[in-house]
Length: 360
Figure 1: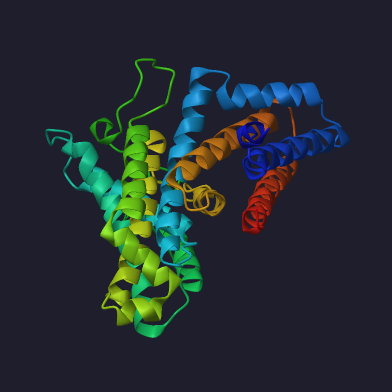
Figure 2: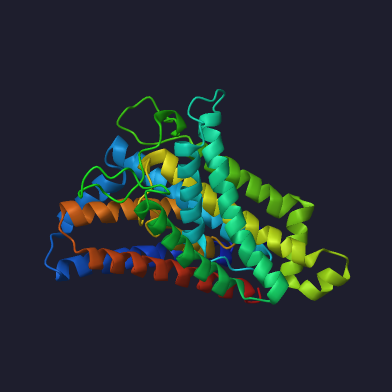
């Protein structure tokens, strides 16, 4: 009898699987009900969602590419969060990363460089720009005690205005104006500076950014779980005063955490620019910074959780766009559905955390 009891699955283990699955299914059913109430065909909406998310090679590749950008922001978030820092400036870090990558690709004379440098140097520029942008928030926190939530958020707005300025001024990155109809955007980056495709299928937009993302996730997991730097970040996050008294350079660690988080955001911007969009325009970041923040929040500090959440939101984004175009689902309703699913998943995380705190 005792052996049978030991063989039974732990209640907590079952709950960890059942709660997220249950709330997601419930939120999806409520979403279908909202679509029906709006007067749209539910079967058509479901078909449009599935087609837009992974119905074709193009749709699947576009969804995964979206997940790559979200993963980068999420990885930066969990790394900073280990030091008890909340980086909400992913949108701005993506923006400055895109600006830097565009500038180097167009005006850095890199298109003819060998050994893949034409691709790598704009990526490096975007990463460094994002790191500098995150580092500013770190410096403000260490030097003046500025809350990083406020500084990263406000720096994000400044970065978005910098994108607008860059594509509106011909002295910066705007393409030459040949007529009044010339759009306020940069010239397309040279083909040799674009990320290579990952599959031989010409219809698939999937690119090597996926490999970069997986390597970044492995590196983040190793740093957080197996490195002295990760241990120090955790110590600072748990008790900054005690960590400083133990001889840890608290200010330097805080600045480094926010700079690395910003670097991930800048890398996401460079990958978005060089992987699919190929030219800079206002709004090119498309809210990825805020969605990536949600991915990081829901991952519970796990790199694998970030990848899983990013895939979920990547397919959700692609399917939502397809529902708007193919099934006529209003854009506002699509956003409501996405928000409903986010709230449901976040609620499941809270329930699991409460369950873990209960005595056995």
